[in-house]
Amino acid sequence: MKVSLLFPPTWHPSQPYLSLPSLTGFLHQGGVSEVSQHDLGIELLDGVLTRSYGAEVHQQLIDKQRELERTQSGETGAMSREHYAKVTDSLDRFAYLIDRIELAKETLRGEGFYDLDAYRASLFMIDKWLELVSSVYFPTRLTVVDNQFSNYSIYSSKDLMKVIRDEAQNPYISLFRDKFIPSIVNDRPDLIGVSITATSQIIPGLTLCRLIKETAPDLHVTIGGSIFTRLVDNIRRCPSLFELADDIVVFEGETALLELVNQLAGKMDYSKVPNLIYRQNGKITVNQPFYSENVNQLPVPNYDGFPLCRYLSPEPVLPVQFSRGCYYKDCAFCALTLDHQNFRQKEPGRTIEELAWLKQRYGTQHFFFTDECFALSPTKRLCQQMIEKRLDVKWTCEMRFEKNLTRDLLASMRDAGCLKIVFGLESFNQRVMDFMKKGIKQEWVRRIADDCVDLGIAVHCYIIVGFPTETEEEALDTMNFIVESKKLHDSFGFSCQPCLFDLEKEAPIMSDPAGYGIRRIMRPSAEDLSLGFFYEVQEGMTPDQAEQLYQYVYERVSEVVCELPFNYSMADGLLYIAKAKEEARQAPQPIGS
Image (cartoon, rainbow, N blue to C red):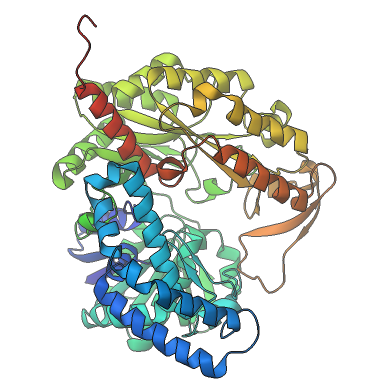
């Protein structure tokens, strides 16, 4: 059996995503040897950032300008005066940008990456190039890490079925058709798996599925990814998705995909495939109970076939896992725990072996642990073994501001190569912390943040504005902690990402909304694939008031945070921190020091 795994745009261009390498490694372990995997996001971006593609875009801009001269109507939107102005402006800037776009890309792949001015200028140049490319498809806007289809909702199946066929506003149709579909189809795989894990991938991913099925209806296409895990009930009522794919894998996909391959090669009894949603004889079936993997039996992620040299960074930063799920999972706002259902810890020795193998095979010492939260005792054992075995890797991970996260453990993490820890602070107001069920105290936050800075471990804080019942004063307590903690925000590598509260499906708060001060929950009827809800509160800031305050908080936090690279990319930030520490280590020491 031949399997082709595809990761569609858009994801961060600095590093690969973990899903396909995990699946590839598992399929190989299960005896499926013919597996190819492609990060179409970075392959597409690499091709778009070239002079040769620029020549194609230039002709498209000229053709669009002529069309608009004849047929423009209205002030804003597609085919309007505004669209004409965008295209004209793009033609004016074309010569300047095309002379610089390949240099910008190569700068990020070389030592120029570590020159902060050159780094920022290169990202700015790439963004302006993508804005130029987008102007043909206005009001659609492509960016390095996202895409905006302002006329369509990604949460409406009707809108999705339209946008994946809209040649005028969906640039992925022509890009995929010209650059990927022929090779994908001509390879004649027995199964094509498309991984859609972020909202930014929904339109490109479903566009890809449509083009594959229309070009080769006999090819078996399977969709997977955490987006659909949160939409199990919605998928039961959305038959149009099965026009684009034969089936959908939800929750964890390793065993499910291997069993699906086996069924395709044998009896084709899809009821035997765990975590599968499929349509048969007009009926949509969800295979339950949902299956969770034994993490200590999973193989090392296999990145063979990924174009590691084409990511926009000078060195690869590879994602890995030490556990699945969250050991705490009581935070009222968090729906992430749904993805993995329950917490499972990998043995530290197994993780050490994986890191050593990845380091040797792919020539990298930089790793990004994607775990939702490192548990303390296993972390202690992991770091002890890293130090004993002199593994010499640099890494980042996520943790909680736990009472028992001691200075000694942080020192051990630093000695084992930890350069940065990502914390979910969410709020610095104790009432709101308690109401969120964070299980942390202000004094723990201060102590741990100070310990990290003293030990040379960089800190990232996520904060939330607008949790139900939160007042403006309480939200400002959190902002002021960040803005006024000069020791923290002056430390190299510090970053902070304010987020506006979203009422998400499957979050614990949804089991008792009234208990959290929510008076009414609403969802637009057209958004049948919504991941969240509109709501009204009994007290505290309204959602509109919270959004206004969020803008203020974001601006104030941005004044004390180094946006690029540290807020923009955890992977890029990790490389910057590693570089700074290496330069400090090599710097001549004063005599007598």
